[in-house]
Length: 202
Image (cartoon, rainbow, N blue to C red; front, top):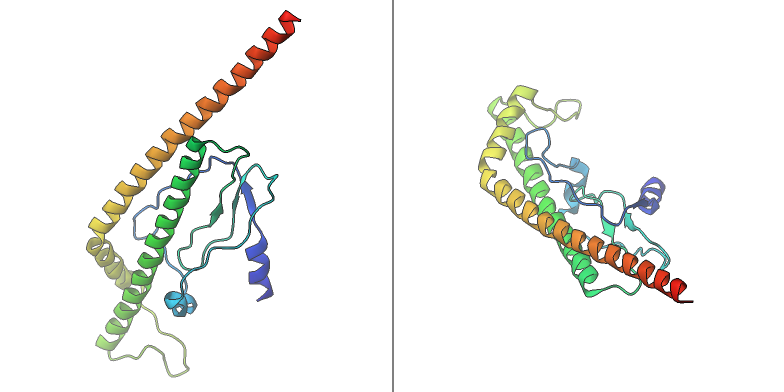
């Protein structure tokens, strides 16, 4: 328990413009979590109460959520945040929540269907889930490949829709980030220009 508490407190600082990479849809990259977490599916994930100091200038990224396997992000709120910056931050947070919800549901379905597949295959062989010593039986890689392919085929449209929405959201985020960066750069240039004009006049 102590190790989990320590891990939850270990936050890493990333740059303010960190983007999520798209989740690759393949048999080897399907997000999943261990069976000992399956009992947590009926619990609503809670957002961490952690907030960085006001003086912080970076986003803060925490340890992976046990349900979605995604790292929660606390976004930095700039001093005198503009409407454009606020729009960007809200869209990034909304995308974060949407991503977390998708993978929480997807992981639950994956784990549940995988368990059902294993039990059905063992039953077909006349075997129970555990052997005489109480150890859990498993299927070999070729048998599991049948499940992985079936799961991908069944969820192909859902995965495609997820990827399309992810790219749409991140394209919008990237455009907003570019606008914010250009606006900040223009403000810096204007300040230097005004400062130089003031020096020349005096």
